[in-house]
Amino acid sequence: MNLNSGDLVYLPAHFILTKVNDDGTIKEYCELKEPYVSILLRKFQTHSDLFYRGSVWTAPNDMLLAYAAKGERDVSYAN
Image 1 (tube, rainbow, N blue to C red):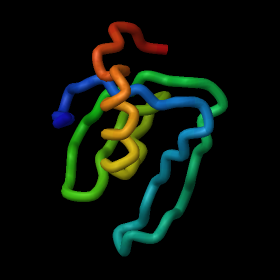
Image 2: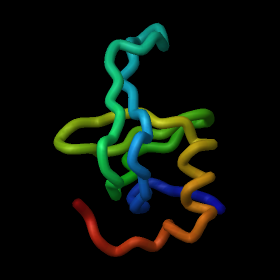
Image 3: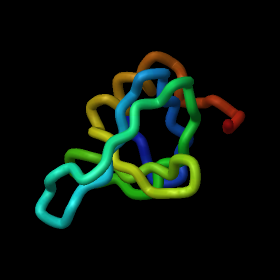
């Protein structure tokens, strides 16, 4: 399954999103308390930028693809 910019991405409860510094170190993280549907903004080789509650967060592509492959890709609502 291939995710692209503009796709809706299902994020389950306890999914961890991060914000990173320019050198790649984590400066902030967020563990979701409930499931959420986010918009994929930009996809890079190893990670993607997602829009979550008013700001841009990062998630690893392999985790996003794991949830999309379970049939959650075409969710038509947003929190």
